[in-house]
Image 1: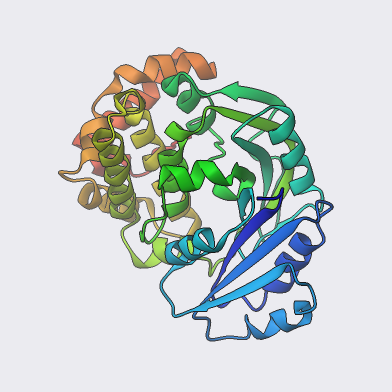
Image 2 (image 1 turned 60 degrees about the vertical axis):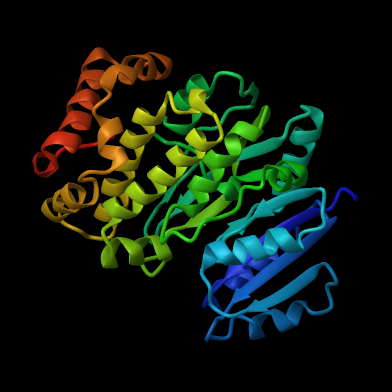
Length: 338
């Protein structure tokens, strides 16, 4: 196996965006690439737009009937032959030195994964360096500390597309993407965490995450109960840790439940859903589910707050919100959740 990076790009009806995405990938300063585009049954000109790249033998187009983004990513993993794996969403784009910098950090630090920062690109503004990533290498020996500090911080970086993985970590773990309507990428990230010993973090936003109104996250938030979707992925993660004897990764799950609640509000509000309807969705979607049970465990808030430097007042507010979400979710309407 060479030092090739296999870049997996699931694509479905993204003809408007795929050119910019592919150009940013194929123009990388790290040229040893295998770019696997999985066309997931697109009905627009997505596949046709790739004809201009036919002469680049690094590009592989795989056609499949529409099966969803999770299945497309799994197809890409099965087809990957490189020593490293990266994921890109087909409506996003990269800085041209992203993979060179990630590869250098991963190899220099003898890490299993390298992670960079990202920009959130909205129609009328950009949130630059969203997760405030710093240059540092972290040994993932204390599951709770790593989760509190890097995964559950106010502006987390849990996305698969900010990462360069050693292929062996993914394939030996057996972790694959699951067919949830939303959150399959962060679920993959959290299931893979126990198999990662060392992560190299680098500063600088090298990935540009486009926030478009017809993207999957907005569509799901409008059409489905987002709280129920996140309750489903939460139970899948807890079940994975339990069935694999990973009890130490269960310790921070109350805080993960809080971050899922936070995401319900964040994406629902962006999709234009009223706070009253969000609260009603939480009441229905969390009722009787594992996520509600974990939200009742506020004992983990104090260590979480201490690691992130939160004030006592903020820690107390998080406790109130967690208890309200599990006991009286309709009271969440209008509550600011950071």
